[in-house]
Image (tube, rainbow, N blue to C red; front, side):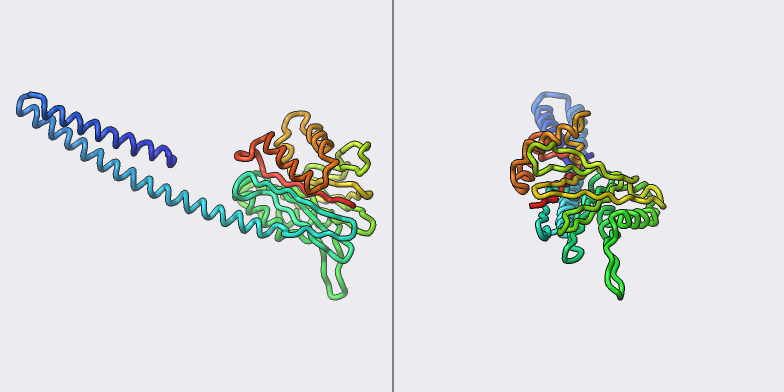
Length: 317
């Protein structure tokens, strides 16, 4: 029984005690044989005493449920703050490349996790992982993915930036090797961008494909055709291919979690989202993200979102 069910029972029991007490008063004032009146009096007093004990028990249970609900709420709020601490505070800007992000958990914590980080003087790495499901279990898995993702090898002779395909393969091996007690999968996309050439290298593991918003207003918003692989945590020896995309000045590439697809969940979902982005493409990217977030509130409501949602924009100015 939930908190409100217990509250209802307490109120109902209190009303019953009042009614029984009134009945007892009526019985005492009405003429009746002495023996019958005493029996009724004893019966009602016993019933009232029993009900008072039940009300006391329900009140104690009410207080206990309230205490544990308050404690759970505080722990989830703390977990949410800790997860926020793992997200990048300031997205790096290098050369003509700019990053923007929209992060909307479905609950206190999210199964989505992303990061954008400098790998060297000219290269920026990024990733977006989405643990299957949402809530605390998905959030814990996303944190494991974060700690297991390796995008650069450092040795005594220097360093080597891994290709996104290598990064994804190693992440998949780490997840499979854990042998979690329950079936645990995730989708992910990771990449690196050379800020001198504006060439993006990408690898995808069961993740929605990125969307390209060309700088030319006449060019359509379209999905990028990149090689994909299976979900993380399914096959131990899965190989992930690396695809490359050259961005021109004015272009924006969006990577996102499937929370967007949950919003536009009919058969025209991807077309609807591309149309929405086409409507917003003339706005500056930070304003576009804000307007898109407001649009999502109109479509799905902000109080009961269907899924965690994250969007990262890579822009060449």
